[in-house]
Length: 335
Image (tube, rainbow, N blue to C red):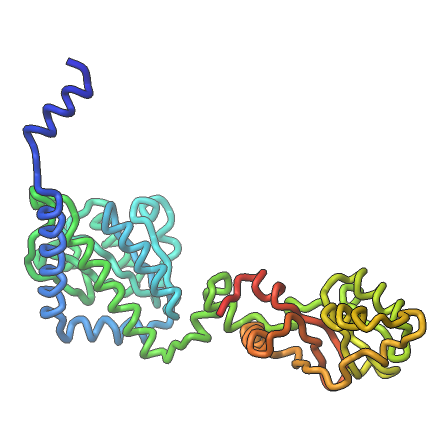
């Protein structure tokens, strides 16, 4: 019998109601979360307060599936204002324990509380003098016995049909870690500007951090002519810089007007002689402009509201650059 036939026969003999089974997994894990939520007590409050007053590092460790959870908890804490990192317990056994200092807090996660790689580093953590927080489902485990502070999960079922594979347990570990991170961020007064600082590549980070001066056309890349310049020469400057606008300045480099590609098209419909006209004759003499410290997202909103594609940027009264809608969109800022 070929492998396809064998698989088909196996599927026929082991038919399941996929939707029913899937919903059962959700129900089992939601039930576990609710049990842990109801079990939160002063021990959890003490752990949050302890971490919030930590003068060293917060180090999260775990082995196997709890190790993946521990890595995520450390990352979430870091992104929400608690300086933390993940320590692999197996690597800790081979020298990485040197990362731990007496004023650090170690959060060790092991549902059984008896993971070999975890239990083997516990005596050394105590010798170093770091504070140990144990997270486990076993009150009588080695982890809890060694811990200075602990949180023990109430009993619940794993979502695995055999009640063996870490499923519900890793879910509640993850949620508990999220609760720690969020509570700590509120204690610190962590707000969106802090979040943006730690996430400069994210959309929020870009909106809250990038200013027009960071992405403007300046220097030789900006299109600028002096007042009194012949229109034909201004057109050459505009076409060379290709940013859709030319800025007109006086002898002090102060902005006195702008001339856009839209203005150019309207000028040509009047059948004028570009060799006779000065740029002063066709420029907008009361142009809209912005300061160099304006957030790029605010400049984008302004340009969309005014239905314009580019704005001159000034510092004091002097022209320093030009920003376009496409420049802002190009760095990933959208509204």
